Length: 113
Length: 185
Image (cartoon, rainbow over all chains, first blue to last red):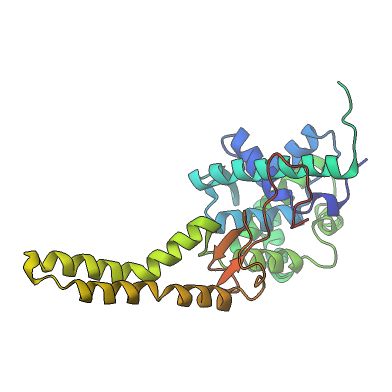
């Protein structure tokens, strides 16, 4: 089962920032594969959503970039800036709080481990 | 594993440009992504162009230029803004409004030393003038925040300065310990 885009909308920045926080630097394709791997294919970040978001994060100064030339190709690596680290923590906190709220609102019983 | 040559890379780059990807860094992002997908999935004797054409629609819903529009939209949103807590906002606004006058008062007081030249009545007038600016402060807040007149600025809300409108009261943040519904939900 994959989640609907409506559910994922609004969490993409948080996902990207968290991944960049966990890894020193990543490029776009690597991010999509990492998310697929971590979620067992349940979440698949589309390229159409990922790259505009990465550009927005870069414009906001939350990520820094460095490029690697592979022949005629250019691979752009993203990493968190100091502001991005702060934003990542804040976004994660906000999302956690939101999930707690949804659990309470929808009366969802957490599964026992 | 398929190996793309320079000519094929040029074909992809040119095609991306023709399909409306004007931003160079976005084009290079997409090029790298497409190249990886082709090289990982296409058989060595596979048809490059045929595979490329079938691969491309996974990047968009209607047409590829959607990515360009989305990128332009997200990167041109107002960037120079400050997010303040309610208290910080009032402190900033108060400092901004009465700061010059209090500074003037302090400087003129120092200037009046020795104090035999100090005129208490004059200082009272100054204080009245400074504090009479508080109604102006409230008026400014009312003027710049038409979306939140009542109550003026709710507790626990944040204030965005530099957005549209210039000063905007954001929805009230939920209490961390409370399972209540956030106002923005």
